[in-house]
Length: 308
Image (cartoon, rainbow, N blue to C red; front, side, top):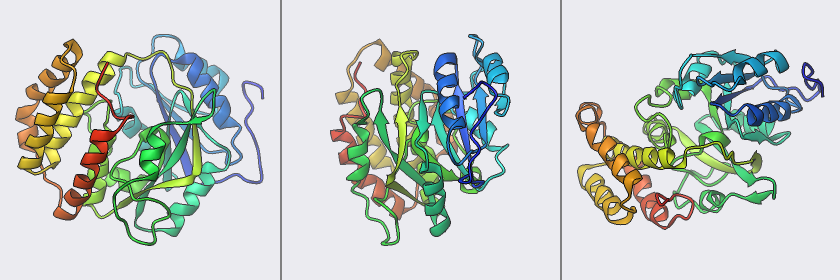
């Protein structure tokens, strides 16, 4: 495929737009866009360039002019997805990262599931880690989710989702406010998922959907871990009952490794207490009951870790 071509197919599907956020991952993003351009569904693609300084935006504009490119001029984190969803005109939006891509046919299959189930807000795909093509460890946890759901769900009910592997209803996403600008990146999905559930929506894992992930080495692991600690605490304080929030906080104090990164995460969380108190809104009891079922699974998780 040349730089300015994209696939044309009788299988084109006008139900889903793909949204990608990126920051200083030019090579990975260009590879992802080549993969997306070759999809039989030929989805519209919106890229939010979160203030890259490596020529990412210029390369996208030159090599993939069919892509809608947003350049906010700074790193918005997950809110870059919100900015893109404002431009989405299809009923569904598929998120992927600049180091991941959807398998051919997956977007159409996800749209079919959302078409069939009016109360389903999101479907999360099976994740294959490249280059080996092995399942991401989180897949087993999605497949064995302990949350009970209605019989009509097309797969296991979920309490949260992974943004880089999920197709959502654009209107539901907008109605609950999208990703919180407070959380930026690092477990930002948990708060959005709880708000979707509180609004009466269901989330599900769909085994028949696949996304590929070739983890980028261009990442600040320490910063992501600090954000993960902070955001997990903020979510607990914002949406869980007081007793549960306290127990989860104590558990994290006892179990995270006390290094500079953990101290930073806790310090950031404590600094946010004033706004957390103002914006605290506990989820309904039926949603809390689902979250409690997830607590033990999360404590045992090998994929959800706060160690270095």
